[in-house]
Length: 499
Image 1 (cartoon, rainbow, N blue to C red):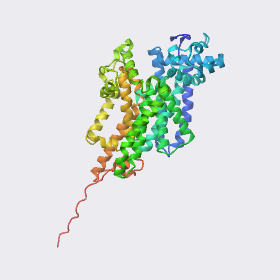
Image 2 (image 1 turned 135 degrees about the vertical axis):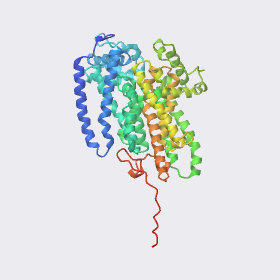
Image 3 (image 1 turned 180 degrees about the vertical axis):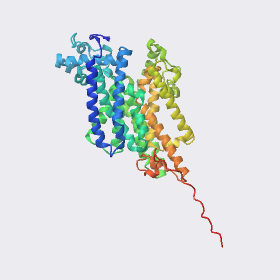
Image 4 (image 1 turned 45 degrees about the horizontal axis):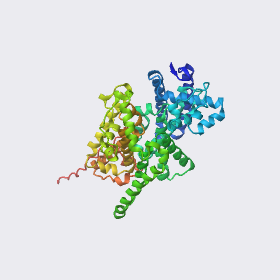
């Protein structure tokens, strides 16, 4: 039991566990039907139920940890601020409409009363955190204002964006379905931080759906109303809640689309002429889009990005709550050149820290184990591909290039502004599935290249620019249970002796 301002002592009651259980059972039955309909044509649906259960169970663990271990925190504050807005809807519908659609002013905050409870001011007067309340409000009402049931409903809804993105990558590399499922559906820290009541659940799902929508629009030529609307809504979601994620997405998506188009040009001379213009378009397009969103990006806009990074870094350094988990990448002078000079340390910290020896609690220990595995996976890529040939495998595939570009840009953004492991392990989750996917695909292509060379064949990397779905089973790596023996060299026919 914990105390929440305006709401008194609260707990997770037994009826919430029962209601959550019945809700999960109902969704399990529905999702099982969807799986049975699609699994023959799309084998990746064998992970559909397991991914859903991982997401929901991760969300429930998140809720219980925040409620009984931390006894509060942002997640609890988000929820009970939403409970106040839900009560206001029944107490005074007109006031609720004004609060939900109007400005975040003191006048509107005073529309709440002691019966409804007041939302926390640090949440209400920040438009980005209040956007989370606007999105949570209908869920909290439908969930009978239960923290646990709201968590289950939010996790199951957010799963759809992640599932779409997972299926997108499976469409390009169907033989790597199991490893891609691990990257998108079963990474422990992503499941934990990306499934509870909070910003990260919305932004992670929004990021995944936006990447899926870009693929549908530019590569699958699916420009249906649903795809366009979903892409716009997911982009808006990310911009309004965590705009720095969108700042990393924009150049990565432009690079993906432009590089894929350039790769399709067969004439070397034309390609040589087009590349510089494409690079200029990439830079100009990124600046134009981010500048056009300046007001919506707020303190994360291009004009304010450096000062925001400095202020955030300084705040976390001074905050006593973060002191035990603080790490230092060195002094910064507040200029773009100064920030870029710290890029290698910042990116490495975002990708591979905290290390196991830097873990101070069970959550960070799990992240430390993940990072040790990630470092091993990245190192194995270097060894298998060899450093000299690694660019060939990265730049030979636009999808790999997009995944790693997003990881590097996003890693720089959070690594330079987040000198705290506790916040870092949470902020990095939108990047992790894409970084892992990039490494998985590189390892796969390297093994495929070696497999071809062992059989005196040449792998044309240009044919893999849009994935390996077109490969026949005999041209792909053998799967487990279907191992093909290396062909023996042909021996000369014996010469019959005379007589």
